[in-house]
Length: 104
Image (tube, rainbow, N blue to C red; front, side, top):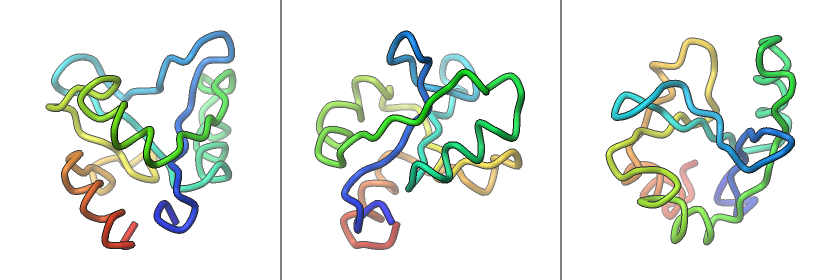
């Protein structure tokens, strides 16, 4: 879906571009989704996240500006993040390789 749509989706606060993350520091995982619907479904499932809104990030911006900057290089990314979490983790390298091979 990411390769087809040429974008990822993140959840952000309505008043700023803060990206939803599942933790703090080196253990944090930045959550991204392959569609707006998936991101909204996740936010709607948890009352604490209802204020977050989906934001489309074009793939080239995500690849060149977010990885290593907005998303620290040591962080993991949660692709199509769900409450279970663990099955969704991927490194930034795995995400890039998967999208560029049209697998994600």
